[in-house]
Length: 246
Ligand SMILES: Nc1nc2c(c(=O)[nH]1)N[C@H]1C(S)=C(S)[C@@H](COP(=O)(O)O)O[C@H]1N2
Ligand SMILES: [Mo]
Image (cartoon, rainbow, N blue to C red):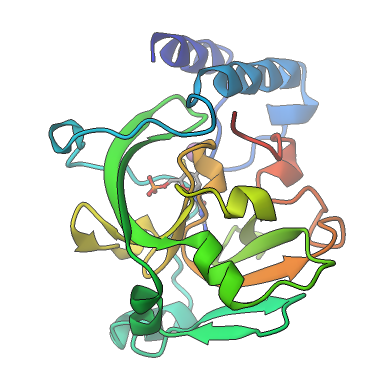
């Protein structure tokens, strides 16, 4: 933790921020290498032997910070919120033998796992939350990936000022990690809109930007390069590492 705070303060001393509005200097400017080495430090301090640490109830931070792009304000998402997500369907498609369209009750029936884990943002803040949801691997297995599928891509409802949707990706091994969840609840309540309702990824073995909020669709693909700028994620397209974990 101390090291993480040091990384954060050294970044902010250089005038760098992350996970906020895109800064030109972030990766192309003279300090791009500083960010890259900070990420390498993070890789070294997260988790042990492939499992992220799980905490006790008493460790939960009741106020879980909100970060990232704005909560989606478009008509599609607004309509879903108004209808209490009754019309929400998680789409799982792409290189799948059995593409899925899952309602929230169907998702809840598919699996149930709770974990108290720490979320680490590259900006240098952390928060411990109690997450409840379905192991992602269970949902991917329901869709029966074709043998050519190598990655799952999370397409999100939110967009930046240019209209680019947030997205993220994992390889299928990371997707099947027992702590990788499609989270529906945070701290014993359904996710609120700001924290990614109704379904977000929660992957405690990797840095915060991998934990995609407001997931609309999971696409199984063989290659990440044809998607957006080809980096495998919104922040990766601006120079972050694709693999953000141990
Ligand atoms: N769809 C989407 N997911 C996202 C982001 C985002 O901007 N859009 N920001 C990421 C980053 S950088 C962080 S630190 C966490 C913040 O999650 P929180 O708002 O629940 O704390 O969400 C991640 N997932
Ligand atoms: Mo972040």
